[in-house]
Image (cartoon, rainbow, N blue to C red; front, side, top):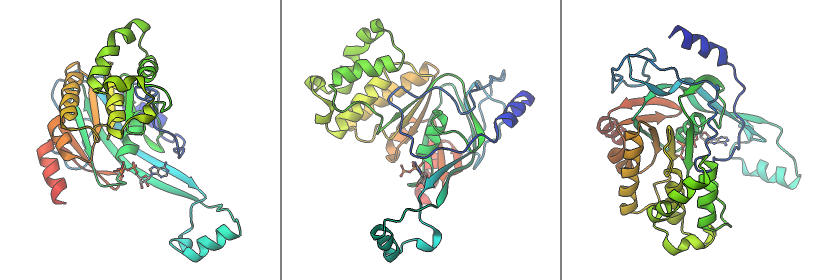
Length: 309
Ligand SMILES: Nc1ncnc2c1ncn2[C@@H]1O[C@H](COP(=O)(O)OP(=O)(O)OP(=O)(O)O)[C@@H](O)[C@H]1O
């Protein structure tokens, strides 16, 4: 713990986040935690205390952690934002457009405010919260796509972020995207050949695999993204709403796949507005509210509280 504290103190004070970065391609979480450090393992085998509202202390005796988020703050900088006095003022906005005046102001959006938790091998953690509560920002920070303004993220293994907007290439066929996506996740040509048919079958896109992705419905695109990303065993898989557009049958299949990833001792984070998906899939839920953890624990209890409040 002393070593961890020392490491944490070294990384505090990293540069603030850069706004407007794109979501990673499937399996392309850059694997670079914000700190570039790995989660230290511990010897104890006791699970963390569930249902601790707010923070889980880092020194709770645990199994092997895969992700440690310690007092994480993420701040976006928006350049050209309106000043307070201009807020909602249509006349000012119109005048500025007509005069072609720029906006020199810089606004900071404090999206994640001091989040702390530890995730373990085999955890499937659902993240819930209202729009704008910081769910996607937190996932992107864990994936190493957003550097912390303060605090740190440590991961053991490679995190891969699968988002709804994950950048498969719309003008390429499903077939090409499968091959490129698999290579992007570090598979060898032999592994790609071995997994190819399974990905097509799992996604259920059938003969559409020969057509450009621009011809797919949003549900078909999401299914293909999930099928590609989950074809590889991930240490830490981060899923942002990617299951939302799937139908019931696909939801069931993807839940089964998430279970397999957990069984192979990976860790899954799942952001979804559909609370059924979270309840059926996760063994733990974190409720984010205005960038802070409001509750962290058993899915039934957290979701019941979330539904009430
Ligand atoms: N690129 C960005 N630049 C500036 N502010 C941003 C950016 N992305 C998100 N934000 C702001 O950060 C806050 C958290 O946003 P985030 O997308 O993480 O929330 P969320 O809980 O995932 O929301 P939703 O449920 O609507 O997807 C919001 O206030 C949002 O406006």
